[in-house]
Image 1 (cartoon, rainbow, N blue to C red):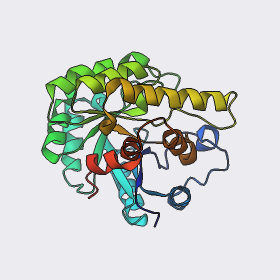
Image 2: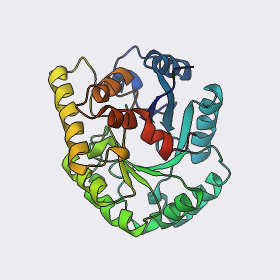
Image 3: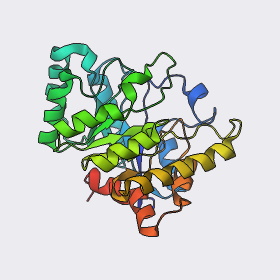
Image 4: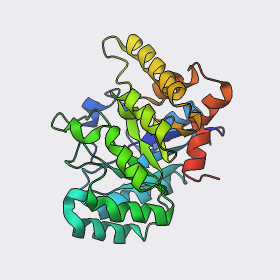
Length: 278
């Protein structure tokens, strides 16, 4: 087991991940539970929030997969389920009925941008009520999409402001720090006491052109978001593995020009509280 402290708030592990050899941060990535745990151990990461993806053939199969990963990792991989409101009210109701039987869930995830809906879509009302009743945070995809056919207009942080105000007892996470709308994400975090943001997916493969410059710019943008919002207790370190390496994601935050106690919050303290890992 890795030393206590660090938690990755955003990874994906799924048999249905699209073209992992092409999209992963390196083509020879060991995209298995063992491969992910080995990478976590190398970087002192105790737990990772494992987000199911909407490409799964069915919610049942996605939940079965998440349960297997959690069991094989002895609880180090924490499952987050996905609900798609474009399946209609009946589809959302059926999904929530199935999720009622999943006690291991630490959160829920929605994918605006990849799917054509806004976070304040009325069809999501039952999901937010479920999240409130179960005490589960709702992770919301924000910003750029891996799929070039995604529609960015659905995935701007500003669109979360309305639903965060409407459901004050639900905690929301702006995934990917809203990239490229990072300043906007920082404002939504500042304004809403129930909104968090993670730093996942800000970097691609180290083989990409100008990676070193992109790394420094990403670090500066994370620092700026924390400083501008004044809310170091509401940011989470995440990688978006397999798109980004754990090393890149955590080195980014470990070297940030923040107070040591605030860096510790980002690296694991905030996630421990949000996902109830006590």
